[in-house]
Length: 189
Image 1 (cartoon, rainbow, N blue to C red):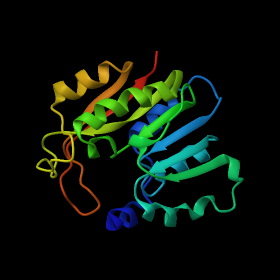
Image 2 (tube, rainbow, N blue to C red):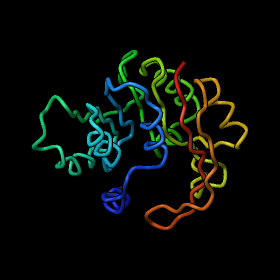
Image 3 (cartoon, rainbow, N blue to C red):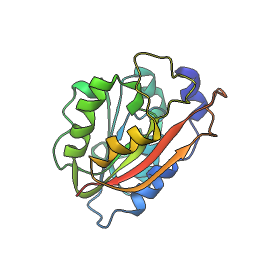
């Protein structure tokens, strides 16, 4: 994980985060970066004027938070912990970004997490992220969840209005491994 964090440290935000921000039609700006990694989405959302809450399971993430050292403390918070066991709140966020995070959960945990994420989003708010497909290089990992195109769309369609949904088969990790993912942006009704 540390190598990926270091390699992705200066990457820009994902397309889904950018698209998600563009779909917001109000500016009561609060965001959650769920599974924040090297904080690339937190920095982007902060620079877009959001108060940002970031959560990650890996304590290594703390060393990437120096961007926020001299910012007002009430504008950024970082929680190191298992988001499966944390209260995400209700109608709290305008946008939740969860890129390269969701599929790192067993299906039973993901089935519990997704409704909690939607519950944490304000009406007409945005949920942006991705799910890994069956062609992903980690597909044999029993602690992860992988999707077919149909199962990904079916899972996401129950969460809100799917504004964007596309399959990506040609991306690579920082280490060069083949990724297969379904990128999405969902608007909460």
